[in-house]
Image (cartoon, rainbow, N blue to C red):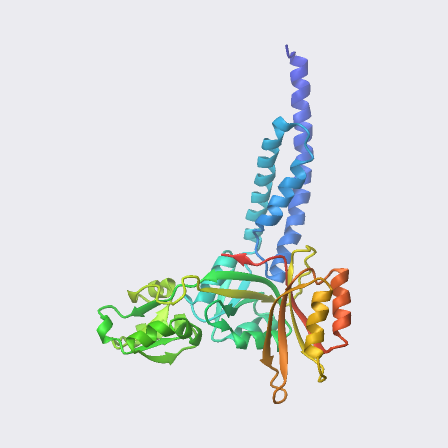
Length: 365
């Protein structure tokens, strides 16, 4: 039987622990401020499910009492939820640049990746990119590749020639729709307007209907123009969000040819991120010396140091005719000793090397 004295001692112990927990809570949230600032500078998401799972697994193993373990897991999760909530509030003033207008797929991506930030529209890829270079925005989200229509060359060039770093890659499913002003019927449409990537993604559909095409800076701007023109003979290819934003009628939904149409968006910021995980990825841009076998040797060096090359693409450097730079994406930790050794060896075969991005994993939204 518990005596009154024992009960008072237990209550006093709880009070002492609560007092210490209050002090530690303040220490923890001070550290969270630093984490939030790091994420703002590097353009990374607040939520990191993989790290949360790792923390819960590691810390719950510290408890030997199995009866208490499930309660402690809930306690840890609640602390992390509070931490994320605090980070979201701290990041409300963050500015994320994108190319286009509200309703563009880049706008959708910006809002999904950074739901608490202020998404700021710019007319084109370069002006959006330059806004981060100048400090006007904290980071910029730009498309680098579409699963159906390939690379976005302009963005690859910005990565090669510009000073920013890629600190995250996010995959966004793309659904294209045929949008027109209200009252329009399919037989009235003669021309479609959209971004070249969207026109390419819907090329078979356009060909089947015999539509003429007009290129626009982005899909949402195309929708905006159709709404402003008020004509029944021209339609836009754009998102559901664009249809809602500009009050357009959806003549046909999901007109892109691929059911797995996905665009990879890269987040660029002024500071480089340095992941420590061995299962991370990196993006490297390089040019090779003008000697026989230089490119083959460079590729061999990457593999010989234990890195799994996922993609290798070429783009003109524009400095001289038939001169190219190469985009290499690989699995592995570029900051490891093996990574340092690989870069050292590559310098013998490459005239330029730029590690433009390093991140833990690709995230599907």
